[in-house]
Length: 482
Image (tube, rainbow, N blue to C red; front, side, top):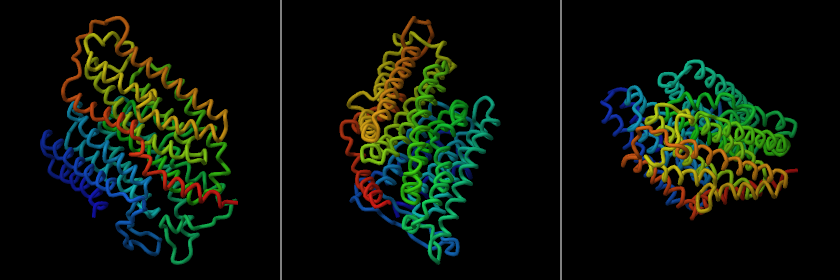
């Protein structure tokens, strides 16, 4: 019942907001209560996790097409459920300080998206995964279209076309592999993983699957929709896209590529590593050259995602565990950074870094909070990003020393552009701007997220114990490949 509740609670709350359109305070209160309930369920699943994959619901749906309504989770899926459960209360809470349009409608779109995201991470049938995968995008599409910023229509249409292309490629892949299963055909992941597809088929099937997930993360050269969309989107939309939805790409790579077409994934490993690391370096350099605070954070997100994708394809425990661990760290970091971007926009009226500077004397509490977030962004010891990047670096080193050098360059560039952003926002000459320091509500938002950063950084097994077993199973299955 817990699994169904994770989907139904936000779905029913969103439906109520859409149907009754309560006032702003009631709408935000209902949305926040809904996300806190799902957080409680997610934490309960984590607390009762025994290390064994769980199937909670399994019913026939359309047997002729191999479709079953089958929900469950492995350790990796539970990590993604936790990520979604932990972050959405904060994403909803952002709306209290940044009113956007109609709060009832905005929060209903966010909750519909959360319900679909839980479905993605719990689906144990490929067709069911695809349905939730596409459903998660519909409310975000409307959020961008109606509450986005400048050029929202053109940017939203480009976002839609990219995701449509990836979704259609994924649907074709699922239909194809389902038809390869014995009669009666099944699209359950357990049945698809048991297939032994010819190597020549896996070579091209890899790309039809990978396209959907590469667009979602995104990585080079499937990234061009991302910077403009992140900048144009309202803050809450940007948080969902960067902190949670991008992780569907990471999760999809492990769930589909490593289990259904492992030989294809092995064959294309070097190419994926090259484009992932090149894209990460490219995004890091561009981030440093940005004068727009929100665009800088958007490119930093793309850089981090490229490194995570590369780590998955190292084919060793350090790299894969590090890439999965970093999904949680990156999600928390992106919510913090985009919240700070929104805070500064409210006070200064622009994201232009040249209009900021010298604010630390007027915003000492804000300066401290931002510095703690930057410490996580640049992977300082005791923060969760330090653990993830150390694991990913070791994974790259075991695979190829030059790949590890590229990873070190990325870490250095990340420190440069984040410290540069901090300097542009808070240090330098005082511009005599009349701005308020961080208030109690903003402390209430940022302090728990910063606490999570340090708790998970000091006790990384909170996350690692979820992924260690599944990662080892993956590696054991790879050793049997020809």
